[in-house]
Length: 502
Ligand code: GDG
Image (tube, rainbow, N blue to C red):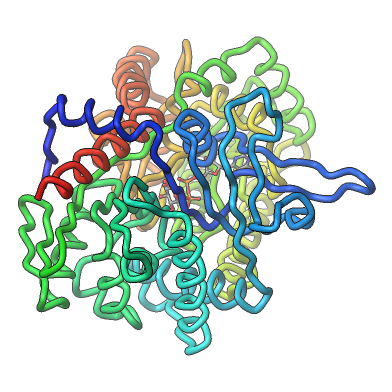
């Protein structure tokens, strides 16, 4: 796979030259949301994850972040060009947030439609979940065009456009054809990319590929997805010449570099918060509220309730474990934090019902007067409580059927301190490519193997836990969110410089 040009001088020169230039980040979700609370307007700020990482970078670099304005007071605070300075406190470094408005019909068809009923299942190779409707595609095209028009109005020769994710598969080429300026365009695709066999099932797949070929740089989490993307282009776009080993697509009017940038988490911040003295109190509060024996063994799962996350498979493995290991009864609890997601889509509604039924079945089957084997929390859990749960859990169960990267596995590692836990991880998570040697690997659908792995995690010696976690922690700290942002910005600068020099 292409390792990119690493000429440090070139990077340094280009980055400093571009320090004043205009960065334009484009994402579906906005970093700051204004909402009405009686007569007041509240501001929802990024509180962790990718958005706060990118927010930090934008505060440093300056520029404009273009996103869908979905807060109910968003329109009240923007100027006549839909722009507002963020963060709201003028003493902090600020940048511009430019909002794009979507009608309810557009949200339905572009977001819940083509993005999440076509591209999401295709990219996760969940081909039986694809539901394609003409109005979904039309709205996806129109919304991509609207974002492209907004970007085109802001760009000049110096601009660096950085798009996020699968909501904008068409926008790169649209931006290119919309402006006579020649901005650098980079894109990070946060979910997997399937091989050509699966991708052929994608309605309008060729148009999506042509859209993405408008980029100068396209990033995925791991090399496998880069290779899959390049093979799709090779098979489906005859005009393009693909060099899979170099990670380059040559086209008559330009060149696309495809590279992996494994996304990390804010490891230091998570570690600090998880190990603060108050963290244990947070855990105690959660345990008391849910009737958990704080001294018993604890395993944890944290997921959006999505059919790709393998939650029913995990519950099946836990049920098998409780059948085979009666000694765990009354001394072990599994906590599932499951935030509702995209429930308007039938496939999501189904998995949510399936999870609720399995939890009830397991608790009916094994629970006693004073003990429930599964605690199911569907409400939003604060970062403080989440990190406290990570810190206390003897094992984390992360078992996606397919997952671009998976941040939960990394957050769990980041939150460990003395007496660490064990990570049980599906081979299908992108992060497995990086840390597979020090986790207990599972195929989520292999119930017996999965149940044995959970048992092994709960009974592993302290020395072995410590040994594995030391290596994992080092890896997660070394490749954190900041290093991901820097690596992408550096590579954008390199690609931009080589473009200008050609
Ligand atoms: C996509 C890709 C890729 C969840 N519930 C609560 C909560 N969370 C936070 C977790 C974690 C995040 O949500 C979920 O991240 P994942 O990586 O697991 O998954 P996706 O949402 O599917 O994200 C994925 C990611 O993009 C980034 O590129 O890794 O592969 O599918 O940060 O902590 N946080 C809090 N309370 C909750 O109840 N505080």
